[in-house]
Length: 228
Image 1 (tube, helix red, strand yellow):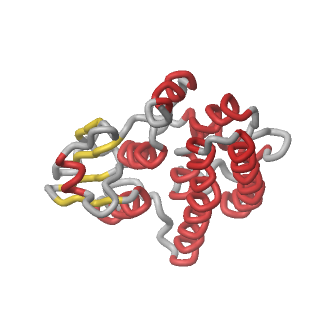
Image 2: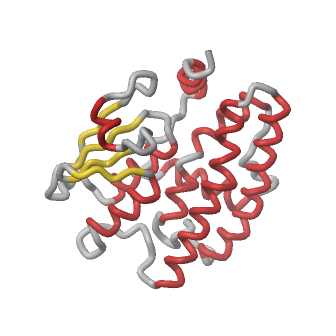
Image 3: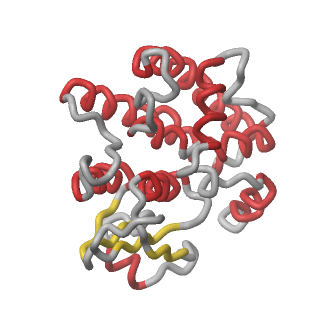
């Protein structure tokens, strides 16, 4: 958050949300300063309810007084509002590469994000384990996507972190939580060696390392508030 985008940026979120984390990572990648407001999801603020009256969820980015909701929309908004030339770009400039990145980002939130909710909130262990298995299957598909998109380089975006990296990378902290919850290692070097190495690089990157949750017990304690 070294630079200033020239306009007031405020992010409403919760500290362990992958959807909030991906916005934070992009703000960091672009070097944008912003105010972070931690929300209490059991007692949502009027600012959040007024800024996202449809879904009433985080994240919400407020830029110069105007709210933008939904994490992928926020990331794409930031890429357009703070474009390459002055700020690093997250989405590719070439139309086909951009469409491909959007496809795989949507795949991640459908095939990883949807079962992520089931792992968190299903009561039966069997449903949790089945959802974790679906995440494993999605990551096996993404192993091939990474090989194609990266071209042998470090990230889905090539030499630098891109849109798919940010969307998938925001779940990395939770993969360790799943292992403790259901006994399934979803990102495993034996099954998906390229993604396992990518995950280590991404989590250690300057923009991500202080954002992703790394205390499994703290995350589980936070989650328990919504399960009681």
